[in-house]
Image 1 (cartoon, rainbow, N blue to C red):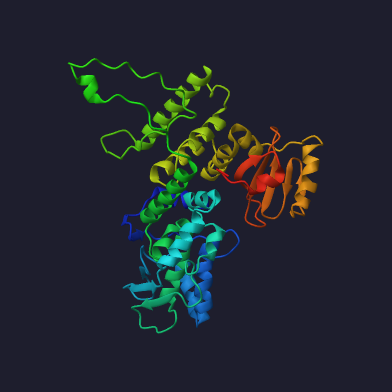
Image 2: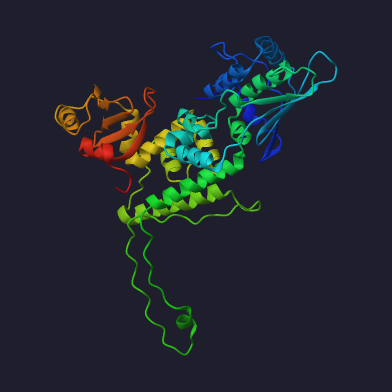
Length: 423
């Protein structure tokens, strides 16, 4: 999942505000397949440049300039990419690429696509651009979308210095695709805050009705010395589920808000379990299961700074990637420990419910499922039969074999395909 050099680029964070970022010169390197850029979105940028160029000779010299490291630090602001490029003269040329920023409707489409599925948000968390976002018109450059300008006397379109900047910008996008979003008008902090807000709204909608109002005694009655105190209220019944902790505001002099949130949530969940059963519910979990449970218990999308750190640290401690953890969290939220087992452990079910599933799916208009062990697969939909006798639905982009849990499990395979949380 991680691209070559991405970790190094993340470790050396550039100095920037949210609408202006300056990146150090990207060292020359070649993609594994011989292309200039290493990612599909970096190569989309290169393709827009090469289909626009009027002079292939200037384009080739610009690529050579980029490969030889003649492009200095690159500054990115909305609608503009600027750098100094060294040519044949001693003094470098000031070179820039201008482009159109994305309008409000385009950003709404981007945000809707990015929050539509856990896989898309996990990819952004891991500095990847999901292929689904390719459908957002105006996000990736089209031929003629990149407008070069340079202080050199060459009137080529583009000149070799502007071509060099375009090629080097593609490598920059390999390392940090949020630079592309900034070019189109939104800074990383602004974008992550909006994604997190939308996810919080969705999480709140899925959380169910608000907790009931608890009985209380007015303070004036308790403190009135001349009045007979009323009897205390009866013991409260055990709630159906532990409550969620309060939102802890960040404070440089206080513990980390994420740590406080996790401690309070853990205490509430374990206390509720002890009151209900008298047993520790975590005793049977292994390290990976407990890490997944811990991440799943934390509300939010994983796109705030604190939650990104949680995913990164938990995944690193168990030699996994943040995407592995995000997928496992989705399975845990789908079906708890059994949902995680369905994600990670194929098995051979006995004849019976599994064999009856295919005729039922065919009767419901779902034909062409391919069987393999406990799984039935189409190009973008999959059903997995769990050891608990329930069917678990999965989805993937067509032809990618990148399966993510969806909906809630059901005893009927057709129902599992259409059920959603809260449905």
